[in-house]
Length: 182
Image 1 (cartoon, rainbow, N blue to C red):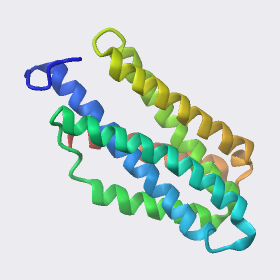
Image 2: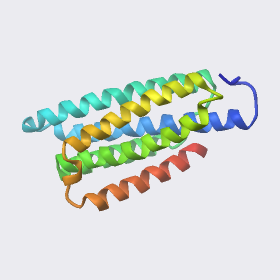
Image 3: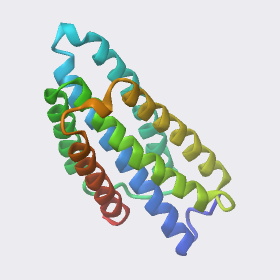
């Protein structure tokens, strides 16, 4: 593990990684909360609500891990957390209002971007930060499982799937770049 008090480019890069990963997990929890705000109210959607709750619990575990890592390494979280919360909740609620398949298309799109983002981090962390690398590897596996679940639940059959997925992926990639710095 790098010394959290030691200045330098590696410390700065690790801080960026932790900040963006924390922001991403924060946003993911907000998306699931937005989806559940819709599906929890509909008795005939209880199975979907339970599935979303299970995935949200996984993201909440990731978030608490990054909360701890930010504190341990004295890294500030993104100042845009309120924006990620509102945007995530809104995206979740909007896709849930569009239907189960659209909610799953949202999950598949987000998880596709995040698992690729984590894969890039793993390549960067392998030699210098083995413990953090192991954590990111496990979380990447979790994100892939969520993506596969969403696909199994009909993500690709959502109305306007390509446009919806594409727009969400663009938003996720932009959020990653912004959260690294802000």
